[in-house]
Image (tube, rainbow, N blue to C red; front, side, top):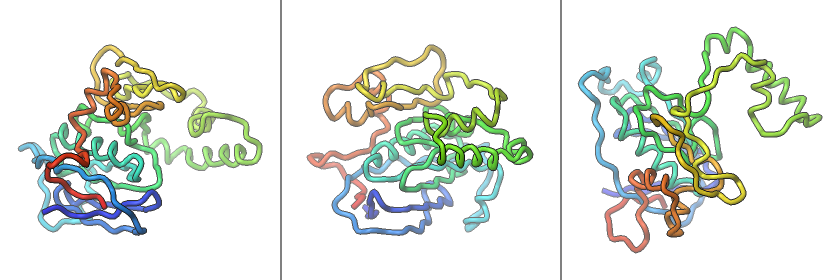
Length: 249
């Protein structure tokens, strides 16, 4: 049976998924008007090699180190992209019941709304950066980065948002990732959003960073070739469609 979910650009959501098909959530809700509708995706099941999930394990199971936690945005403007991203993750995951989705609004980092995942997320870096958390904590990097952010707030010594303080702190102790793990820039630049092609080689994550979002270009009837790779994950139901749907109103 279709269910309703209140949405607003100002909502703060925290979804705790015991599994993708058994969601328990708490939310701070605000008044919202009519929202978009989405068709229900197929049911995705674990492979035979996946770790077993005890019935009723609930929140305790979330601490299992074999599980994957994914943080994403959930706001009205990018909701269609967020739904497509979740769909792509579940479709390509070998163990979908070991995924925990945490949705927040407004915007957070980690896995953005303008990506689709075309590989098993268990093998994927969830975003554009991979960190060794043991070294991160041992080196006190969080506090060191925060100090540079405090300097930036007072004197504005750099541009480009979050990247410079990381580079200042790591001082060259970084390694580049293969294009496979972040095929970014598919939305073009921030001025014109022109079409771009994929880098050669295998692809695991496609990132429509830049002005051009695939859903906007598809709706405008002027998609780029790479937008056709995003389209199969789009669960959006257009108002004129008679398909059964789940309401987000």
